[in-house]
View 1 (cartoon, rainbow, N blue to C red):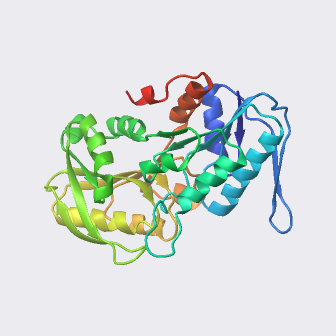
View 2 (view 1 turned 135 degrees about the vertical axis):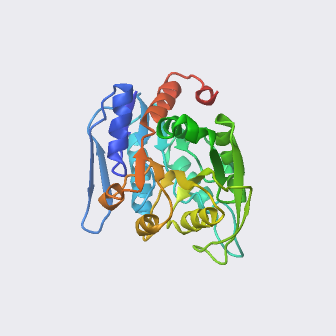
Length: 313
């Protein structure tokens, strides 16, 4: 087994390598003057089981193209099996036609990864579970829930956990929210929102009683932060004791950091599926937890042809 890291999130790749006690393979990546990407694998990979770690986060197109070029390099170097470890799968929000003459880009990206030569894909918390079906190769979609459960147990006292209420920011996240709430025998609430146009959201109603509760918003992606901050404000207006959030993928495009800083949110916890700039790390309301152990164990199981689903009971 060999681990290879693209340039998108090298700290996460290094952490996974530490978990598995396997060194990262030496790779040379550079750009020509016109920003074409060049990749050279500086070690022999013939006949090897390769795990290529590269989230397709911002700049999404650059990181996606780098992933495809690295897969091609590995195919041409006669790697035995190539698993694309894509902790954050970009373009996942474009998983259906939203109107006439619009693309299904999540399917296009799945085709690109498959056609480039990947034999398998490993990712975390796809925006829509059915995206697994967009691939014609085996795809493992891990869940960030175990990492969140452990952190909530460490961050909240027993008394606070007894008063937890988990909140889904939309109807689509109810299954995810209910699954996490079940771990704490807690109730759930749902934000009923209307989105006037792309990139904007308006909170309409809260389904459930949040008064006096320690509320935890749960979602897979935070982008500009508007939906999350509006939901938190609405929850506090209904008499909640506190509002925090657990989000798998911290896209955090501007002005998300400033919105979170100015919001009523106590804390926003994100995972390290996406490498973050200093302004995110410096924000006192944003805390990052790692999924390296989860990914490392999944990689080990795939390499040993063991069950990945047993990671989640």
